[in-house]
Image (tube, rainbow, N blue to C red; front, side):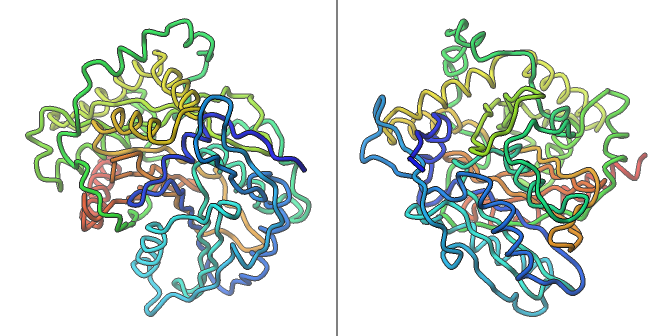
Length: 430
């Protein structure tokens, strides 16, 4: 098969790798009881790799990206020994041990000489096992990754997977973070918006600034019922993400010095620009823009915070901001790497935290006949941003995952504890 030109936005994310901030999405699934990790490996090699081109292609990156000279996906033979690793967690094999392992791996880049993924088979987690899938952001965004996971999971018969190129099911993430109804063409007709977005932006974040050292720490909260989170936002007709962003605001106030007195604290929010029925093809890819959300750090009442977050999110969704930024990311794919990095740095520097919505399957799924007990996905920060929070749901439960650069936040468990306390207070009140 011939090589194919990399899409513009994918090329931009390929070039966003930095020595201290690698553009790698880390997805962990865990299983209880006796787990046949060899069977899980086989299922991945049979149900995912043959069906998605980016899992069997490596990036071919020219020395200088300029104009029509773009990175390409070059098909190669996949050697599982380059991608699949079997490890055992040290005692006691609890979540803390798993977090330590994932944090250590998150600090490592992927090898660009081979397809940009790794599968870590992890023995000794709790009473079962876990699997860590590492994929480069250039391969695809969160909706694309969820499509991969759905493809990997057992079908009704536990056998033949569906076609890799299919219309995306109408799953919950569309309603939680979509901005449908705005076309890329309409953004191009408003060329001045990007200038308005950039003009007058603060030079850097007011708190949690760019002091990255490349050491990563990860953790997550205990689960809460997703239905209770939805109920907490029902009075304001707020989404799960509106509620989660209000919780994150309160947690940052609780545990990060300087937040409560800062003039502004902003979250970077990735927003899909895929339409509801747009097919997700075998080449996956990235179709999201970025928007800035001012966090209501001065609001003491939780319902006031939710209302203000919702109002800001509604305004962003009604605007062309995310679509315009997606256009910019697409154009940057044909720009020299350093120029693209400089633009993204200048744009993202004002954000303190990146918050990503990751809706998993509504019902429990199995892989190689092993029920998935839980899942978490950590996305990388963007440019100089060293803190990201994932709003991750699976089978009726919601967890918040934290990945932080130790130079920005040495002890991510403090933030996770604050997030958990805010979630519990919110859901207990209902």
